[in-house]
Length: 393
Image (cartoon, rainbow, N blue to C red; front, side):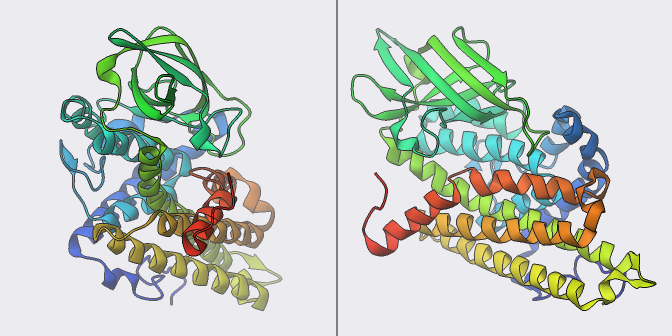
């Protein structure tokens, strides 16, 4: 391996050979976009806690929004290709990758899986072109990870629904054209999804300040106060929290790939730094402890790639269970969290400076570790599946 190792040379287990030509094309397209457009400009945005809206038209031009959805202007790619897209975007930047995942994953998947044909036709083509931006409002300030017990309510009044409640940590909500609000129907007691369009009276989204992870992503607190929407804006096929959980099952698959991307970025950055940095008159990479850290990072990244690649094939075959998706998210996020920490160690003091990029991935992995179900919740979902016993209420 040369000092100037390429991405292919760092592919230690020849992962590239497992991919189809189409999957490689998607990966290379997004990697080039991140190398040329995202990475050179993202640090100042992250530092200022501002979102790089200038990149949205360029992202739309990649034709990747909608992932595995076929039709409606979506690319209909394989699950592995969709995962590689998430991996490469996260390798570029976690904030930008999560912006993409909210619209392309949570919002489009909710409408595709739970919406009527009319709702799909209305929203999916525009979301696929990023002419419209989506948000997904499930988490609440007093509920947290207990998402099955949402307190936001929806009351039927004639041909309209009136929503009341609050949501927290909702990405894209301050500027989204449509926010999917999950609320409990007062009449049936069941959880359903409701499409709240931008500018609807009674809907207020305020940015959360002081965030030290994914700072370029705008998360919001949402207040719904007598927010009226037409009956036609209720997702037609969302009848219970099981439908919400099915959306989360599919998006957790993508988040598992996001973790791979952060780990991959940390390994590539640390490896490059270690071979170039001189310490005590020698390359930092010549020291045994540094090589041990790099080998451990590579081992974890390789394991994450192979685990998630296999899950992608199971997903396409219709065999992926909720527990499988949670295991990948739980395992990959824990491993990637440790990998970026090792990368930060290798860079020493430089590891906490934005200019070296490692600090951004180090901070952003804390969000990946927690969102889409915390490590503990995903662990218990897997535990329930392998024992048949639910350990949480």
